[in-house]
Image (cartoon, rainbow, N blue to C red):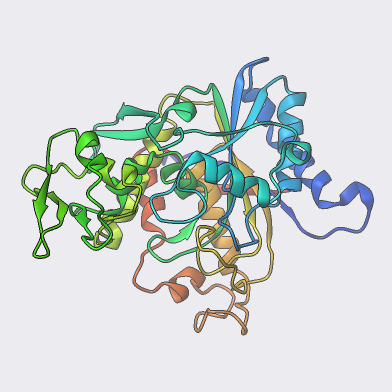
Length: 379
């Protein structure tokens, strides 16, 4: 008799409402309870609620009122919740913890709204890091934010949308990029070594002080000014210099092939939860499915209508189910989606044709993170 792999359970609520009892906040709480998320919590233990606070200028991140429902349910289960994310590589409103917290508050994640503290998990300048050994194809070790690593349990809240490099962003990307330090993000984004944008360099030498292998020195340019120089033979590509440069004079190199990039993301996702087996739950919000991720400072028209909210203990299954539900929709004519509008056609493939968005799901399954086979349980 053929041995059939057990399917993962993915729970689902749609956005149809018609009463106070059936509004979206109450649906989130019912979804949480039906999934049994409080079963992974231990009384008085710290529980990270991993979110994306949104960049300044965009408005389609997961709404703080929705996040509040999860916070309250964690407290009801005896956990001690806090909202968390990590700082970014790029210039914007979240490159250090002070700006990041300010952006989060401006976007509605103030304590009276969400009912818990916010902690930026990798520290003020992304130096709070733990090397997690994974021994996989692309990485022997991955760099995970210290306050996420040391937390007992985690609930990952993800806004499912498009992404120019990975095709889409959901739970796996939220783990991979969202739990990595800035240097970990650099490792995922590029096989190449960083380079100095000399016109931005002021010769402050902060990069030299922070380089772990002494790969950076000062050289005199044609105008006689001292500028930083990176020896590519010595450089190990750790990204520390990118992280610490106060003038963004050291550039990230965005040249890694799409398949390698998403495989690296899968390995980082694996490392981010390696010490939390059986202690992580995932909730995907399939709404405002914008063409690009929440890191850009704008929100474009969604490519499909709002679908619903999913919950699971399997990050591969919940992302697979999210993509399948999106593909079942008809694409919106007034969006950036210019093809694959019919139900059943690959929406993110039409949006970002150079990226195989499902490769991260395939590789995540190969790594043992979960299954692409699932049962969708409608509540």
